[in-house]
Image (cartoon, rainbow, N blue to C red; front, top):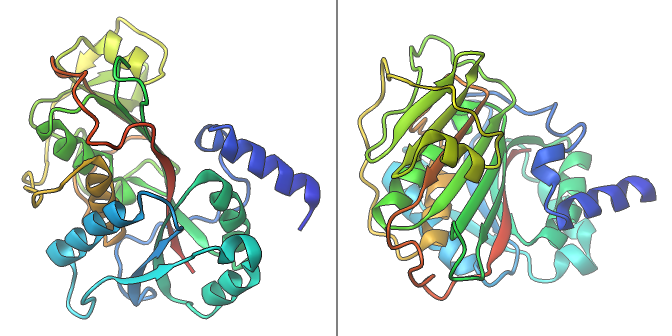
Length: 304
């Protein structure tokens, strides 16, 4: 592997700018297959030996139990341990032996840099890449921030996660970028979620903003977008019924649940857009973080 490229990717990951810049090659090769069927036989979970592993896995298994199709059974789980750092070839071999599998992986930024290169070398197709963080300061404006880049809205987990987190009283922002914006023959213009109002810009129809308990301009700024006074209210022409999630213990479990639901092809709260954001700020936004303040990790959904 070219050393300059390795250092660049590591810097992108550890600097938190990976999702803004993208990963050349792997994202362009992203699959837009709509469901976990046919070319993909199974979905498996890869844990990167972080402190959030068990919570993420709990939510992931709940999604598999709730949405799993015939033949999926329980979610097979593999733990990386220190192998990714001391023996990356063993992980490369695992990926090479798992053709026609869909992997959901979770790890810290340092491990994600190495894993990204292994997926690239295995000709893996990146379906979704997420960056997830909780604020360490209880006085932060938003306690949770999530950013995703996905192959298409088919793999968008943001709507399901937003509807789940809103019920817990969390303050958060979720920003999703879709590499392929158009959903064929769905008729969906905007997702209708409890507590949220959906907005769009006349000059940027593929940009959608969902906000709760605040003006659209303020929500746009909190999402990291340029503030605009020209947000127009959107109406959903066709939206699937809201699916009530099972009880989840904390925000990391909720994230695992949403990621795996998307990986299983549930198509929850999809929209025809290229980019969307959900911003929620309840009155009690300075509440306790469930002991999970200051946590950050990366999630992957890939086909190999």
